[in-house]
Image 1: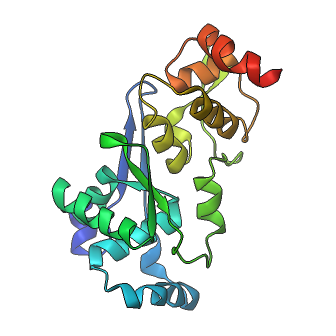
Image 2 (image 1 turned 90 degrees about the vertical axis):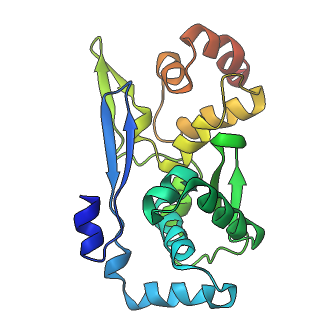
Length: 209
């Protein structure tokens, strides 16, 4: 699929797999079919002298809400070191802002990222779930949230937390997860990689109070 799309002058799709849920997501970018407003949005970057790869990454962030090294490599076909260097360059120009640390670092729109037509991306970046497209799977007859169906920015944020969750950051993520719909302690535990009892004792009890 990637080869055929490249031969047609189209950006390759971004694949994201979730082994636990036995699912994968393919993201297809629509910037090849840009309107006059889209071209106007791209004109904001003339002063930055960006590479074609960096421009593609910014369009990806505009449409999806966030990007990480893996997504950048898949989008541009560059190596890990080049991807890191180009992403850091975008961050140094305040076009992107980094979140997380180390291998879990991801990037969201920065202070100088043009706000034009950013409503959709902002909704994904702030962690809210689209109720019309959220995915759930059945577990013992109950509907369970699946991390594969979260907005990219929120999924990357969860992946950046690591095993030892900082209470304040974990509670912020819990709030973001619950913006889409009410979630049980079991669902939150599944998304955070913790037991329902742990989530209830460490976060929910204090948050409810």
